[in-house]
Amino acid sequence: MARRVRWRGAVVATVLLGFVGGIEGNGTVLLAGTIPLAYVAYGALSTASVPETLTVTRQVDPRVAPPGRPVTVTLSVTNDGDRTLSDLRVVDPVPEALAVLQGTPRGGGTLEPGETMTVSYTVVARRGEFDFPAPRVRVRGAGAGAVATADRTPAGETRLICRLDADAPPLSDIGDTRVGRLTADSPGEGLTFHSTREYRHGDPAGRIDWRGYAKQGELATVNYDRQLSATVVFVLDARKAARVAAGPGRPTAVELGAYAATRSLNTLLGAGHGVAVAVVGVDGDGPGGLMWLAPGSGSEQRSRAIAALGDALDAAPATERDPTRQARKIGGLVDRDAQFVLVSPLLDDVPVAMVEQWSAFGGSRTVLSPDIVASNTVSGQYEQVRRRTRLARCQAGGARTIDWRRGSPLPAILEATFAVEAHRAGGGVRAGGGG
Image (cartoon, rainbow, N blue to C red; front, side, top):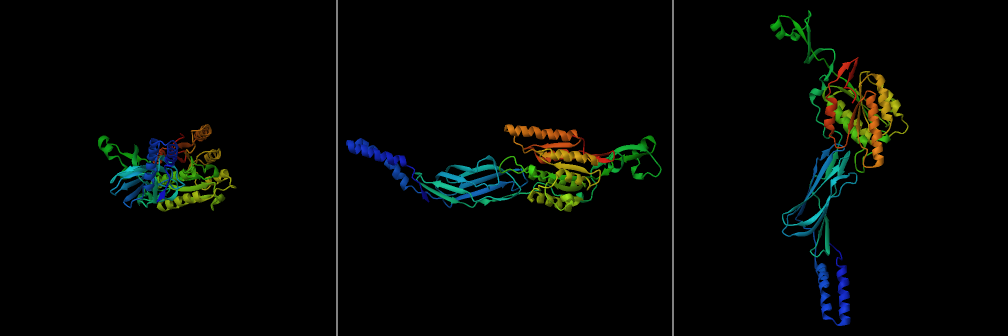
């Protein structure tokens, strides 16, 4: 227990009134000097202690979260004893790497027997594992002259885990072998009705329109949407220019981009498509110094892709690599009808040049851009205008652009992006037009 002098003014008042009363022989003034003296004595005799019956519980929701996800931390302090704690203060230490988005990790007040004090605040998840230290509880005595402080190990959660695949649904077994849901302009075998044509000798009996034959007496053959699979190349912009966060304790654009790529590849692999991963801006052992994962499918490819994205976040940015040359190299590593998905905050013109280069390879191009530019300053507003101009340039060049703004749920954005049925037109598979 620590003791603090809380009544310095009362001491001064007692001495002053006693001195004046003694000189003038005024008993009333001397009596008045005993009033502040009583406060001094009360504070000196008061005691304080943190009772063992004070229990602390912490809840972290969700305990496992992806980068950028708001996480609510709730600290509950319950007085299970039989005495009132007139002045209770509690502080929940927040790991230095995390930023408090809403609320406060501090609380205080009077706690009656059986009552519970709740402190709730929200932090922003970043990739990694973060341990919360034990909360600190402080109790003051009735006279506020004594203070007792103790760290209490809480029940419940003590750690926040942030992973790229934290909220990604498991890849079902059917996703390992089934054909992708891209449809072709030319009909053929499939499940979804496309059209009918005149019957030709040798057509399978299972494709004959028997219902139409019963009605009209003429044989016709049913055409279906022909199912195709595509190769999608996710390109993560991990250059030094992209390793920027919206504020202290928040995830960087590269962390958010790796999370977006993880959710996207899970969706596409589950639909039977092939996925490749390339990381621009770090040193890798792939062609041209790229960090490169060749196209593949199934759950094993998903595990390899998540590992590659995690390695990219841990790697130091390369300073001697030309990202535009790396982009050209990526185009030569896949088939001409491969689709390119660039994940970049678009904080300079280099990503725009990369997208323009891929137009020569014939496949569709998509730009998914996490917004980490603050708009509450003049310079931030200027950078936001430049970023949106780059998005418009990519769109004008034929690429599909997705502006992932803060606060927008990523699963809804990806569902709107990749749920568009692609069609083979002119020999290439595309995932919708620009915009």
